[in-house]
Length: 357
Image (tube, rainbow, N blue to C red; front, side):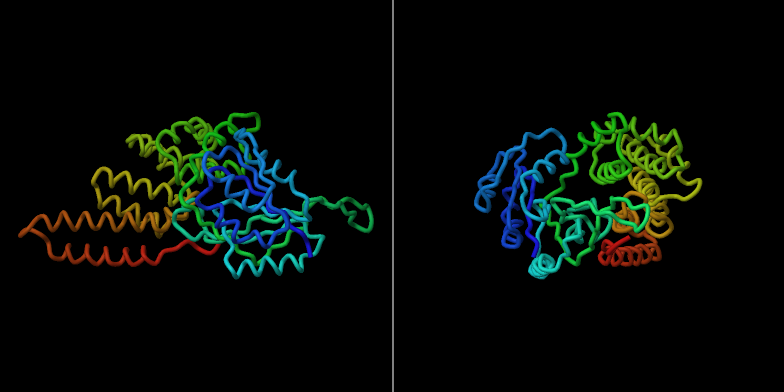
């Protein structure tokens, strides 16, 4: 059976840390907790589970903190967990069985990261594989019978263990400064980090957050507005224009997006623009396009519950306007609006994140 070190980095996690540790502590052989500056009882709670609680001065670098935590581990494998993660009884047993049967040649084990709540609006799927268990010391192996070479790609195993993410709130804003700092360094953001930054900013950013990043997205959009990155940049710039009530700029980005393959994000923001202008009929056109005629490139919610919620809102407003006409109200319109509200509310109630993309 393999031995496992649990390595965590934490800060002000007093509300959830014990829940996490209670679900995993008896399954691991060592617990290493790195605190990056807690001002609550996080370290106190951690000390009840392990003597290996270390301080790490925060330098706006999660990788540095993770590397420090790994340097303190001593067991065969390292399991990484965030404080708001939980293993239920079914997956505790799966984890226990995994320890018993895992072949020592496996260097990385992936587990399914499960989104249970709409609080975690960053996720576009319910479940996705993420690397969670890492062999601490990698043994290099020669491969190929002739012209032999060292195997460089790790052996990865996709397990059936599911890790449940149960956050108490959103944490996206804490990362924005790190993303911005990295984007302005030589080499900028990797494709992976750019995608993560774009998704987090689109879903969680306020007007200032978008303004801080405007030059990044404007440069990308000007380079090639119809490339994947250019289209994502256009969506970000259109969102900023809407937040700033700049309809002309928003239309510039939207019309370019419509040239080839319109995105759900752009259609949704056009719907929101017309809602703000109290033009509910036009807003409905764009919410319908977002929900049924286009595909998302950043945020799946613009193709699902967000667009459906927009449709419900528009028909409720149209119904109220018609009802307020009193004796002049059109009965056929009232019936139509009520039917539309019922239809889209049913779809909204039934909508959920897909299992996977």
